[in-house]
Length: 144
Image 1: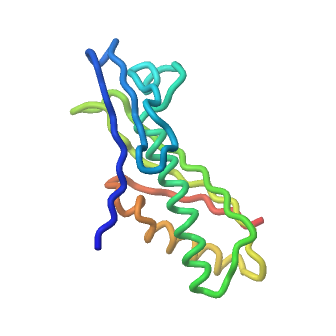
Image 2 (image 1 turned 120 degrees about the vertical axis):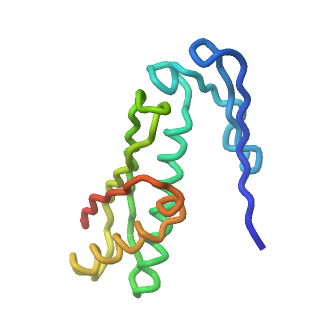
Image 3 (image 1 turned 180 degrees about the vertical axis):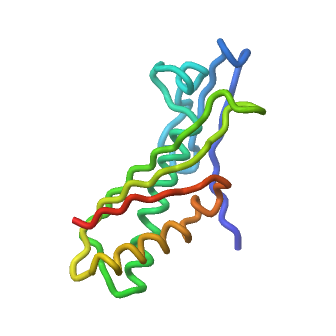
């Protein structure tokens, strides 16, 4: 049985001066969160699709890492992931996501640096969001 996750977006107006709202009706996390050209390419308060994709990637990778660690017999004390999504705003045919850089800091008892690197890279490759993206996904992993 396939899972469905739903988010909605509403937009009014042209690309430069228009505005919209994005919602996550299943979770209720946010409703009609402001987004616009200025939240995407400027500094107006609100969100944008790329920020939400980066958040999804950080969360997905952290869970994937926990799963791969568990299969290898390790239980993480903590996993902190930052996803830095890069976008070129002027590429043809338009703005293009050019990559995602994952920055990982984790505390995992009784693991070696070699095991950690191998498992982190397996999690990066297996993460649902990593696999969904058609851009390079890089990783900096720090064992603390």
